[in-house]
Image (cartoon, rainbow, N blue to C red; front, side, top):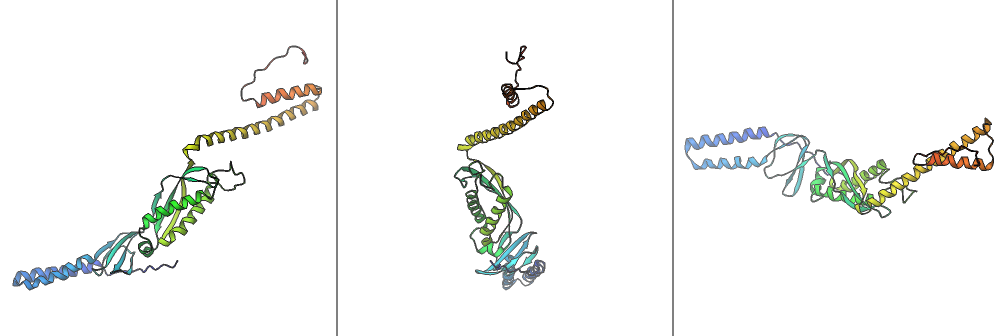
Length: 285
């Protein structure tokens, strides 16, 4: 969308203030010398000039409007004077933080989650911010909420239920934040808002399923750990049998070989310390 903003640099306010002082001084001098009430008319231009004074702080702006007609935007900081009938709307150009409320939404597979975002934004086009939307600050809040709901419905929270998902809200933070920033940039462009940064600030399962999901995550972690333990134990048992055979330490038949494998697997895979049993007889007794 093409910007309709027009930048203006009005006359210095100090010169107008000097002229206003001369008018006031002339009125006081003439009224004191002649005592003629006609000199009260000098107060009219003095009073009319006062509303024309204004100032602009660094990273601030004033949008000038004359009876519904857009005149321009003053971006350069300083003290100015303009037509007293101009309406002067103040719009800050500073970067602002917006931490949205935590809202409950459903992810792409229907799980209820709690999510919030942190948004850094600023006004880029003062004309759009002043005239394209009714209240640009409220517009940012509403559109951010809508963008978060859309984003949450696009991705799963994790890939427990969808193992084919390459990007999830929990693991694909970079890709998700990029999509969020792009979505917000498209939504807020109409209001002349520039997105500096957008990222997920809070993400968790909703309270009603949080405990169940936690148990599922714990079970998955335990299964994964057991899988690694079994893989290592099998490798160690295989290595032990090969070395016993290679060094001819003992000749094991199939029955004794199976017993040794069983004992070694119990020792290596047990989650508690194993109490050894010393056999003082033969292997068969």
